[in-house]
Image 1 (cartoon, rainbow, N blue to C red):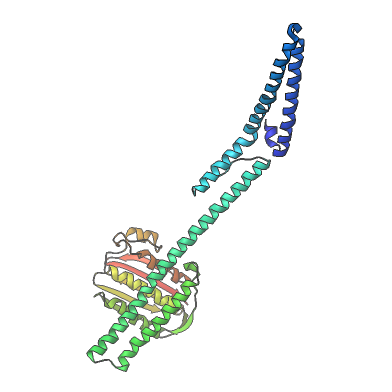
Image 2 (cartoon, helix red, strand yellow):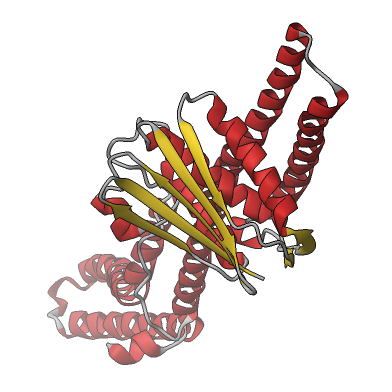
Length: 351
């Protein structure tokens, strides 16, 4: 019956009707011929069986042929389409319609399979978009924390100066400068994060800055971030001044994330080193904690990866991942390592 399967639905249906009519008519003629050959002992009574047989053949033959037509042409594709519709209703797209035929139902199955594949692709793209938005939201919440800490610390310094009566224009200018600078950073960051669909789209906007001015700002902001922890931060900064084209937002962001992570794991002290040469800035942060776990060292800076000692709900991996991403955008890299007395992170930026 393969030849019937290869026919179009219209052609095969037309053929079945013709065959049904021909077989039914042939059987009717055969029955009448047999009955006429019987003994005519009771000729008048022979008409009733003939009529009944004719009626029976008129029903039985079409039913048999219709059943054969259904099993050969309709059963398999309708079964697969019904199964597919049920699985789509249950939000399960991990199946396929495996029915190959050149007729209309075969084409319908192919269209159904194409629709299923497109739905699966769209669902995966939607899931990826949701994951990207999740990363963006986590990065947004994470990176706003450090500027807010600097703002609060600067405001606290001003408040203490007022309360103690030793606030002057000179010692207030640094705190006011930081408040102005970090308020602008928060505004720019909000604008940047609302205009991108994923972290990798964050714009790289280098501007000419002065090395000593940059490190002075970094030292002030990192000191404020660490002031509430009770831990000491020791700075080693190269004092050779030079002009450089860098994205200072990215450098600030990386340095603040590194010091924030390091302060949470250090026992007593943190060492910050900042150096530059003709083409590269290097910022390293060293702590006296327990060091990175093997999982962190093996997988590196990936989002939402937490250290085994990290409390639930702390997105340890988000800060390091942001640092890694921003360093790469600046042509550098992020290196994680352990030393005998703790952990060390090295961030580089090329300009």
